Image (cartoon, helix red, strand yellow):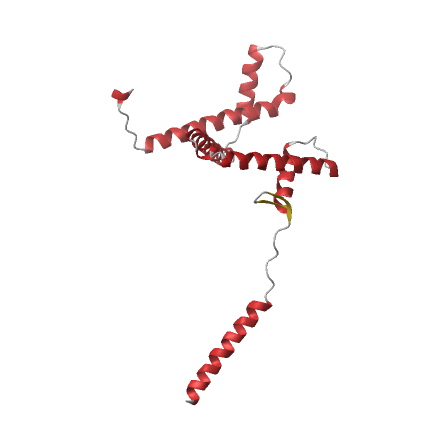
Length: 188
């Protein structure tokens, strides 16, 4: 019986300590809601993130209290239009789904090309001989070409760009060569 009482006491102490630990932990702070638009909460964090993105895109945007209010009004209008479109179930139409799919695909491809382009660019170099040969070709075609010292960097960038494009094309061709592709010519 004492063993059972001892076991019960241990269980009660464990439960009590867990309860105390849970209650003493600070609850995570709820995000501050800047605006409530029907059932949608625009948090201060979301607003500040979108505002920062706008400032990044529009270098002429002057951040004043009035500009922040106007930006908030635009976000509210946008959210109201989104809500109305959802009420009309426009987000489920085949046209909408197809447009989203095309956007998703093009964004995914663009991201892949950017990443691969950076990887390739890190491996490309341009020699002085290549720059001088390109300059000679330019000078042969146009005697009024500026001196090499003035356009050396732009020639090097042009050569680097061409090399990058060639390597990207070779990479995509290699992907194609590795793939299994079957075409039914009768359907063309």
